[in-house]
Image 1 (cartoon, rainbow, N blue to C red):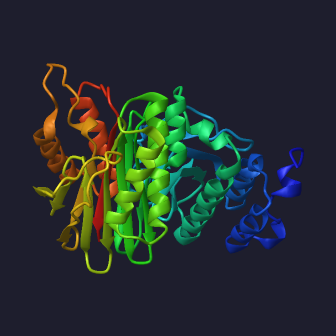
Image 2 (image 1 turned 180 degrees about the horizontal axis):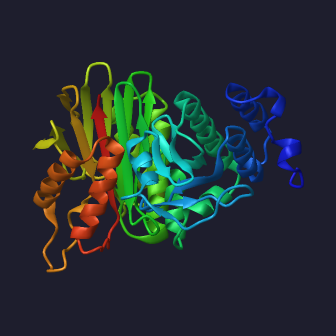
Length: 400
């Protein structure tokens, strides 16, 4: 298969014409398409629509730039900054952006899959776009193709990796669900720092019918030891969650898994949540995490205080389950202590008050959970002097 030409194995049949026929050809030929033919197949479809100079721009792990995917038929180039570029605007807002140029119109289509965004498809047309619905459908198909094929090739991961990555970080990224999800009733987005060196922090979520399940964790220590413990914690959480048991039972199962595997001197702080997306009823168990922040009308209105149980692994008693009914539009921000315990250039801790102040500023300037989390992560890192000596996680939930 590796020697096939896209015209033989992946090229759209010109007899099918343009428009929906091209998309149908893309779908039909994608099922057994080897990963190396993604690029020429997408390039052929773009040419069939009258476009040229196509590029697939993928979000890097640090969420700072969009890196071009190498491939036959795709335009090469340097990574494009997400901030201040048309491609970045399409990526952050999740809507197409058209940039007039001397030789036509450069189109940037966000590659969306269930609210998670893979990157941007860019190409140039001679004139203003007529059929925007067709282009959105093209972008959706390309996003699905990239996500599907990334399961059995390293090339997509390599394109996104712009710095050396530690083995611990490699493990953590392989554990993560999509960094964001947007559906009718709820949206979530998370980010890990430092992207290429993270070890003990992680998060997980699942939308099972009308219930959103969320966990954020912080395993003690650094490097591979912390990554190994985080792997067991997330695995135990998923195993218990999929058994449809309650939050208290999930905590107990995770607690036993960590204690049995690592002994009494190791622990994982964690926060497990469950949100009924029909009613807004939020439940959570806090096992040593900072209190999450409740954001209403783009302002932090309170810390969600709760009885704190022992971290996972210490054999805590049955935890108290805290409860709150959210209002439509409310957001809940979960974070790990590495975010607020980092020291500023002057030596003082960054602290929760500064975090709240910057949450309020960013909330007023950004739209959508993904853009808010990314902007907040970047500005907090800048205010901490660019240092992240401990892992730091942000996870934002919005009841829509």
